Amino acid sequence: MIPNNFISIEEACSKRDEIKKNGKTLVLTNGCFDLLHAGHVFSLSQASKLGDYLWVALNSDSSIKRIKGLERPIINEIERAYMLKSLSFVQQIILFDSMTLEREIEILKPDFYVKSSDYSLDSINLLEKAALSKANTKIEFVGLLKGKSTTDLISRIKLL
Image 1 (cartoon, helix red, strand yellow):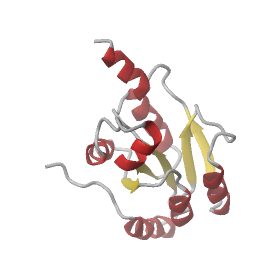
Image 2 (cartoon, helix red, strand yellow; image 1 turned 90 degrees about the horizontal axis):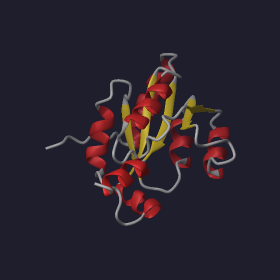
Image 3 (cartoon, one colour; image 1 turned 180 degrees about the vertical axis):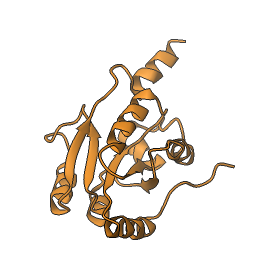
Image 4 (cartoon, one colour; image 1 turned 90 degrees about the vertical axis):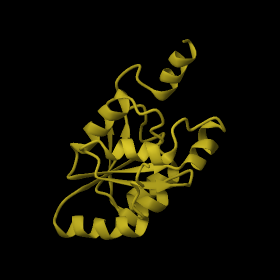
């Protein structure tokens, strides 16, 4: 049986306080990470270099269904978290069920919030952007590996 690799938002707050107390920095990113691939790993690796701790806010199965349709996710949240947590540069996984991350941002107050370079300041959700501003969080963008996406991977598999 695969272990649960999530921490609660309450536990995350406690760990965040300890990180701050020790003068360390917290990097937060988020996503679905369905069919984990080299593009995901590359972007997460780049994000981890921006601070001392990289935490991933992982979309729940139900939130992915609302975002991407009923046929997704392909990999369930327990397995996606297990794979992400196995990456040496990912310290914590927080599961979230909403369509946006402003609640988690407001509570955790990360030092850095990271999105991949297919996003821009203009494309970040307005509620998330307001929460980031209120938390005094710096927004960073990390590179992508061209042609490496879950959608591309699904398309290639369908051709088999």
